[in-house]
Amino acid sequence: MSNIDIIAMALKNLFKRKLRTFLTVLGVVIGTASIVIMVSLGLAMNESFQKQIEMMGDITKIEIANPDYWNDSAAEDSPLTLTKESISSLKSIDGVKSATPIANEYLFVQCGKLYGDFSVTGILPETMEDMGYTVSRGRALNKDDAGSMNVVFGSEMLNQFYKKGQRDKFYREGGVNEDPPDVMKEKLKISYDYEFSSRKADKSIKPFNINAVGIYGDEYGNGYSIIMPIDAVEKIQAERRKHDMKDMSDNKAKSLNRQEQSKGYSQAYVKCEDMDCVEAVAEELKAIGYEVYSAMDYVSGMKKIAGSLQLLLGAIGSVSLFVAAIGIANTMIMSIYERTAEIGIMKVIGARLTDIKRMFLLEAMLIGIIGGFLGVIISLGISAVLNNVGLSFIAEMQSVEGADVSVIPVWLCAAAMLFSGVIGLISGYLPARRAMKLSALNALRKN
Image (cartoon, rainbow, N blue to C red; front, side):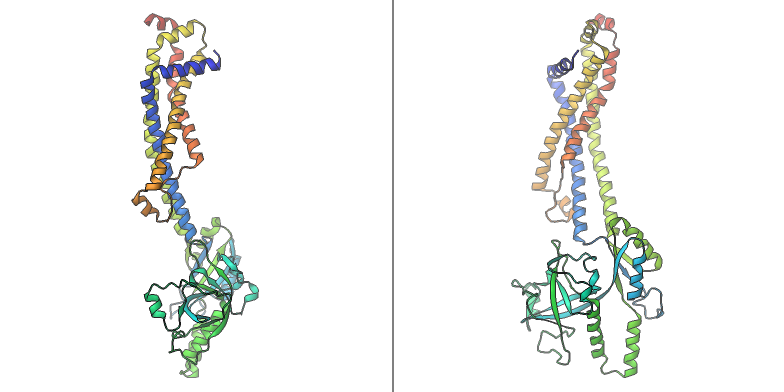
């Protein structure tokens, strides 16, 4: 028998028993649709987790803290003290690309006739790009900016300026300036005086002139600080201490200055070369004694959750497909019993055993493929409904605006059809062998 004859006979036999074929195919449709939808929910959660990770910023960056910084009883020569030298030595750790101390301040900025109070982050200027600050306009800080008053504004800061003397009213009314100034063109001043924007400003505190060379921030809103060279931040901090200690005796002022300087930095950033080495670097930093935070801790947890959910959802869908496989096997066995005489005649007229086996295997595989195709079509429809209508509890769990509830990529459609065809083939194997082993004489005698 030729391949065309085998295909023709397989299709004829399937359509000859329309109701049985329909019910068997329906089982495969339900099974395929179930497993595709379940896997698509898991894939959507995985994409949602990925978006959450991107919103967190650079996940190859590790934040480290000196646990002795806030401990007044800690030894001044503690090996955990974060100094520029000790932080620079961290670059010798395998997998570390760069490192910088961090100096955080809350300062007040004048931009033309507007004012604002902002978080300021001081870093080694040459590490700005390494630390994941994405500049959308102008340029990032570089090594030449060391010691200068050049700054890069966070994009989310631009609409936080208010008019002089109207800070309380500005925040009371929502705290958003719908006409933000162009900080790269305006004259800028920065001060540590809390009353800088009011008539109560301390005239003895001289503001510093600063120059905005760029604006950073991305689509996820990572732009809530002003980035300055750390030397510039330390200069402002020194002026603040000098002002605060002006009424102290020289000895007490010197003692407090020495104590402050001995603490070093409270925080530092370490940039890893890639995601794969973050955990190893974090473990080495913990072994030194530093307190370490890395977004990879959260990422690892999310990956485990996503993997477990995908396995669970896939297993639930697989149950339906397993039941469908049993239905295919049952249909093929019943078909053999009903077609015993036909099988006997085929053998008598010279049909090869392999041809009979191939015919039954093809029938089973066609049931699987047809059911798989229709199951994928239905899955796409259900997925579209879920994404348009949505399931509130799933959307809340994902907590990412615009995230899909169900994601069905092309490879999942192809895999579902292939898998359903293989399931049909496997389900029809034993019935096909049974048909092949039937005795021609016994088959004709039963007829």
